[in-house]
Length: 516
Image (cartoon, rainbow, N blue to C red; front, side, top):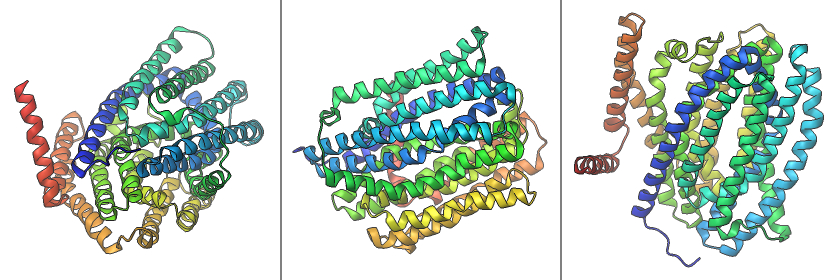
């Protein structure tokens, strides 16, 4: 690739453009998803909704195998693109497809053996819903295989920073999922089975579209039969250590879901599923921003631009936290009212689960640039071993708490505590790999974030404690949170250059609006 490398200004414009496209996608998908989630919960009922989530989680537990390879594929494709090596880019893509095909076979074997055994022998499912649960398991296995084989294509789109593809195709995806709602209402067949089959059909359709887009736009995405033993060994070795880290992620997500099912039954799984919906809706604001920025962190490392890489990491961590906190604070104050307005029937424990999960997300979002930076170096062994071990402790700690009689929400508190410990470990281990000082990280990220949080929570707390519960308080608290967080983040959370950049962009946007 002989094209020149973009300068800093071009990179910033590209990041801003991609972020805007992803946000437009997110706003549309979030609005439709929240609506469809409510109708699906009403149509399936709390019990079947819980069954779908917990049975689908059986297959998702094996997803750590694919998850480790997905991050590996993303790293190697982005790194080759940053280096400008087109031949290596093609080899990486074809090799990754070969590896993902092997993973698909493994997932099918595990799903049909271990998954089926766990369904029939360990899970708490009513006898009259066992056949439907088995159908959900089969659809989940098929959906997982479809997603596995699409990973190299999605990684290629992200590496090329073609976020418009995600924006446009996602519109179609949510429209198809919206159609599922009306099909469920129109037909009298078993709703749970029909829902699983329709979601599988949507998954296949969307993944074929992503593959077609890549084949049409990127030369390297056309598979060629090539066997690069050294690259295969290097990528699988890299993925092997990532697998250990992803295994911990499965344990504190789907593992906890199984644990809650064993101790409390599918109704608590429904409460967790609703909480996850709220958490993911808010998290999408940050995920979109990070998706636009992550490739630049890897590319600056590949090009040896360490100072620029550090700056991108600082901004990614702080801006991600501010975006998430901006949306989270009103929800943390008014969780009960929001859930009641959104759902006609709110499962018990949902509000408590939601608050703790959002707080955990706030901590984790700061870790994203550290994780991406570690992936960029390729030196993941010690990093994954330490962080993975810390996070693996979530499940045994949670099991011990539940055995001692602690309530269901205690497992989420265990997750929060372990994530905080892992955050410290990440900083310590990353220092020698990319030459970033812990003091610099604390000063540029944690100190500013702590100041923003400490100042911004004061006004809405006063309003919450002095006003009566109701829609008027909700409006006042919401407006107060927005103004408080925005003002604190701008004046206390940004440095001088960032404030100038924000003001320049804001004035430019206002100028365009006035001209229209």
